[in-house]
Length: 134
Image (cartoon, rainbow, N blue to C red):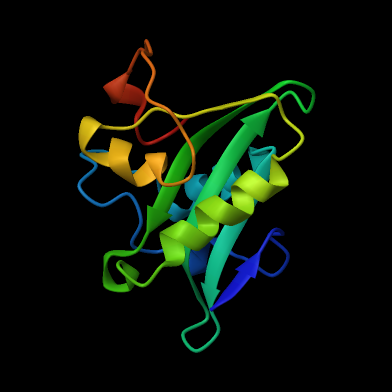
């Protein structure tokens, strides 16, 4: 597995299979756009299949705050430590940032606590009719 912090050589064709169970998932083209527009990205790339098998993104002001909106690993590649490595690498990338926030379901709290994160309250709006992207 190769971990990259660049999208050089990555095309939308290499992004199939993500956003599992989303009623209106973004297309691979929209997925590539969201990766490109993120402040930071780390991807897990399977050299043998020439596919991206996992990714994590961060949006940041580059000074004090960052938000991690996405961490995904393809179902066939789960439970191999790929997600953990993606989180570790992203937290290293954001090491000089004061606050790093993310929202997750209650069932994922123990997963993120392993990285030193603490549970907090959050507020959000979801416009599901826009879930597939603009």
